[in-house]
Length: 398
Image (tube, rainbow, N blue to C red; front, side):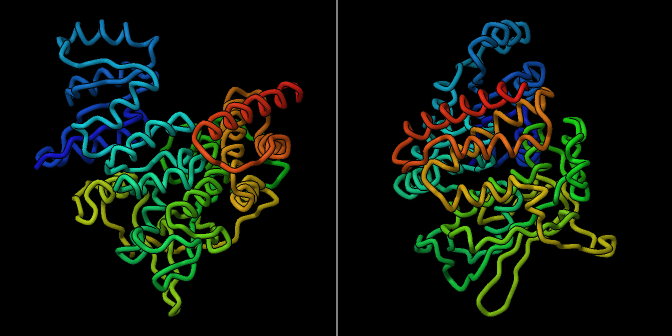
């Protein structure tokens, strides 16, 4: 039976990789709905090729898209707009699988809507789980949604855990013989830079990841190691494990995608070439396996694997994320909001690379922490944290 897929963020790198995997299995999957933010040319090509029933774009792009669809004789495609449109396709009765690949806090409500609708949700938007944490996980259990990680590291952890781990008791303690999670990090493009060198790096340099092809925001997060910090928080929520049971390991080759240690002394690792099609295919078909074009790892060409501890003096963002997870409540929301604002300012060359963590730290100190009782409080705090971060940037002269 063919399953209908909704891709939130179809023109991003995860969205494109998802299409690549779906294309190889036309008898198993159809593209029912897609969303895009700005790249209308690419979206139009996707519409011509995959003929989705519904497309979601920002309201200001809707008229232009309608005209262009009419020109291509694609009048049957329905256009919805903005957040309401995203929520509609995420919870649509005809959709079986939702790929949540919108970058940043914008993905929170559509992802939560998909979870509450009991979908199989492929989670590539880590920020939504960083912000909503327990609320998202409780909703998944209540509505029998399957929340499967697409981030290569969390997917690797998931593959290395016991098969029924997601159903284990959620206590914050490792379960079923697990003792520790080892979350790998490439270290990004500036792993061997000194603090002085980091001071002068450019957005162009920060966006050149040595191993992965990714969007701008996640590339900068990878360079500051904030990406690993957000992934640390995501892992704690997904696998119901306290942060002190998660060790971050810098592994520059990105061959081992993460590891799980067990009480008997075993360490299980998931390995593979760095290609997002592998975790996407795994999450699409789990517990089955789907064929992809990703070549199997050639161990004879993989000369050596290196591991080292992260330098939290140079890469303070990682430590700030761990502190936010430890503090709990709204702290991870504040961390994420301030980071999104700071990264955007860095990409616009308003601030230095080393000032990203500084802005995040200041915002965490200024915005009062409290219990993350509901989504409204989380969204309100997100807005306040953004304002605080933006004001700090202006005061810095950015």
